[in-house]
Length: 253
Image (tube, rainbow, N blue to C red):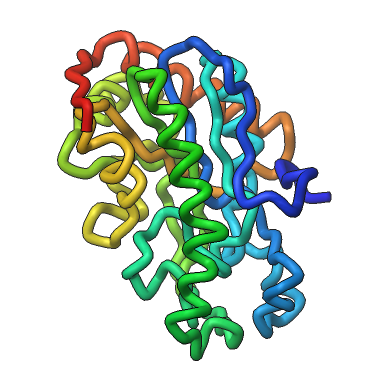
């Protein structure tokens, strides 16, 4: 089994450390490469089924370490983002992509309205409902955890840790102020709001006035438990003081 992969491969959503009282809520939308049997293999070539196109390798393992360290609940997706990308709204074409970077997904090429609605109802909405229920406990911040491939469309990426935000940069600003000199930590890299990657931040945090941030870690830095622990230490060195500094003005939205 791949590191960080769900043991309950049938669930669309998994919650761990649900009673955490540390004040943050963690999300890991792309935690699993699992494709439920009802979708076959989406027509994917075998080498793509557990590649970075199908999930965020190492992200769940990192999120679990952060969850324990911060005493924070963690909501993780249990289905491949090639079936439904939980960080995209239902109306987005990229929610059920027919192509991801160099990967063709034949099983998504001609989805009709009924097929799209089934995935929305069985994968996206249960994840949303789970997050919404945990938000009732009024956490102080929302943090989403992702990883990215070191080479994209043939171009190497030098960013090691991306600190992403949308309209609310409070938590990102505070984290960047504590960025370690030993890491290449960059704002809104390798993606930014213009790439449509901040759906979860907007849906769960921005409309409530909650400080929020999306973490993107280059996945070649997350290939072993020791590497995950090292990156977690670097992230916590930024995130802990940031959470302590950022004020919260919570809306009832």
